[in-house]
Length: 165
Image (cartoon, rainbow, N blue to C red):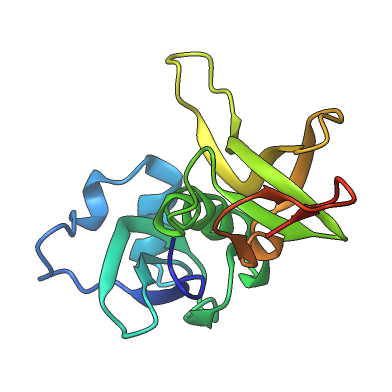
C-alpha cells in the first residue's frame, strides 16, 4: 500500500503522442466536437507522491477547463473524465484484499474494490470505493478510498478482548 494516495493529472493530449488517435477516428459526435475545438482528447495520468506515472488513460474526450491535478476522481469536474480516472486510480492506490485499516473507531478488512458491472466480463470499472467487513463480523460496507489510509499491520487481542493494532 502506498504511503499516500496517488494524484490524478488531466492534460490535453497532443496529436503526436504515442497513443493519440486522429480526430476522425473518434465516434462521430466526439469527432465533430474535436474538429470544432469545443472538446479535446485528454490524457488522465495517475501519479505517485514522487510524480512517477502509475497508469494512464488516453483519448478521453472532454471540454476545456478540466485540465489540472486532483486528489481523487471526485474532484474532477467532468463526469466522464472522473469515471475513467476512478477505475485506474482505484487500482493504483495499492489497497489489496485483506488489507486492514482503522475507520470510525473500528478495524476493517478489505474484500475488494467496488465495481460497476458492465455485463460483459467478470471485472467491471472500479468506483474509488472499497467493499469491507469490520473485524467484528458486521455486514459488508462500502468505504470511500480516502478513509482506508490508516493501515493496521497486525491485529492482537488485548487483556480485555479488545482489538488493537
